[in-house]
Length: 109
Image (cartoon, rainbow, N blue to C red):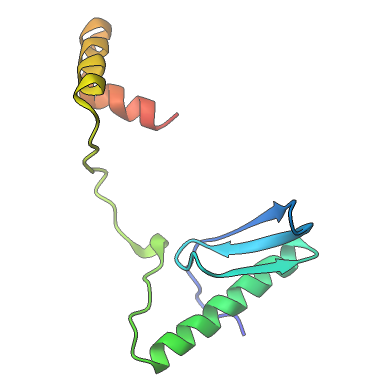
């Protein structure tokens, strides 16, 4: 019973502890599905997410918006210690690039 036009963010990974594949959904971090194959894990987590959404709608609870549907500005604030700020400012000055470009480069690694 997977949803049509499902835009949620899924991931399938191996669980060494369970010795099975586990399907996960970023928008529903409390949900998971174990299966013998990655394809079955994806199918299972999609089904569980669809059921959770159906239940939430019945109960009048807000349903998470898919991450893929969000619009991102490319701007966000990061708080660091004064010492880290100073070290980045020095590195920025020494390399001749803006603090913003330096931080963006370090975050994209």
